[in-house]
Amino acid sequence: MVNFKISFLAVLYLFISLQQLMGQEHFEPLTKKQKLEDFQYLHEELKAAYPYFDVNKRLFGIDWLANKKEYRSLIKKATSDSAFYQTLAYILNDLNNGHTDMYPNLYYDYFYTAYKEAVEGYPAIQPYVDELEKTSQERCAYWNRITKINDLESQESDIPNEDASAEASNILIEFDNSNSVAVLQIKSFSYEYIDTDAAVLSDFFEKAHQYDHLLIDIRGNIGGDDHYWQELLVAFLIEKPIDYPIVFAYKDSERFITFKQPEQDIRDFSALQDEIKRQSNVDFNFSNMPEELKSGQYSFTTYFNTVEPNQSGKKYDGQIYLLVDGLVYSSAESFAYFCKATRFAKVIGEKTGGDGIGTDPLILTLPNSGIVIRFTGEMALNSDGSSNEEMKTMPDIYIQDVNEYTKNKAFYKYMGISLE
Image (cartoon, rainbow, N blue to C red):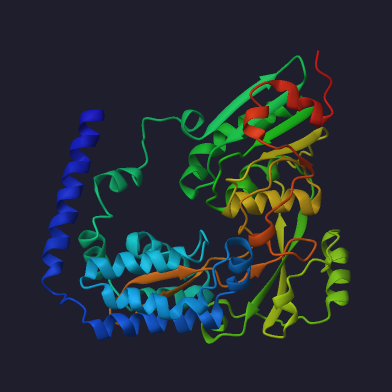
């Protein structure tokens, strides 16, 4: 089986490489003028819609907008297409945001197929399809080839290993009978694990309900899909739906309005607090809202997500703990936020990685190069009004260097468990 996989990957890589080589003939190198035009377009779009410039200043000391002259100079020095691409990557890295990058360009087919298939059920995401159709697979493949990003190793990482069981690849389970603790470690919430992990988790929770304590360990989990934790974790532990609020600030840019189509602009924060409390029983306030959100340049909106119980409708009667560290990000961060805001679980460990509350990043296609870029378009707020990207999720019980501390079971004391 191993030899077959290697042969398959080799053939696949050769096929893709030939496609890229054939496609290269159709693309003339960009002129300096075209490169500068693309950078100007990127700068204007981010200035109009990106919400984290001030957060970047506070956390990393980088004034991205003020660096425009420096960035233009770097673009001018990029004498080849490859150098231009790498320079854009450097400029975007200065924003220090894990959802702002050229990922849609690297995996164009994945993004285009996903949005194209989803648009039938969710017509509101048509702008994503329209934006991706401003370029092509061949154009994106050209950029990936000349910068040597899409190599055999990255191709292999995108192909699921059919020989690996879900438990071995993504889930680790332990039952501590002496302390009545069921331990579940999940490495990723990636959509590709939803189907493969479902049966394993169903069996786990059937047994876990017999234990007094449930520890869900998501240290190192950088996210994937919210449906994973909503449907495969929380749904097995509740008998009634749980509503929780998503509140975010955004700039009234044309791109954001086109892609997100917000239904309301909220300015009465007191009324919003009452509405959140009434609909979700979550205590939400705006006491730690960033200063830039008070400038009048941002609008606010909210919606409520609902996590439904599965068919068993079986409430877990013990105490649930969520173990986190600084690598927890994206949809894993969303789970941490949910646990703390709704008090579904007691969050233990280090401050998380942030930027997990909200919706898909915006995307834009540069007009001359056809390079596709994604970027966060909304500033999601914690239940105290702070920016989730900036302040992350602070655990209910903070443990410094949690990965070292949990090498033995002494951390059970933080969970209120008496060790035998």
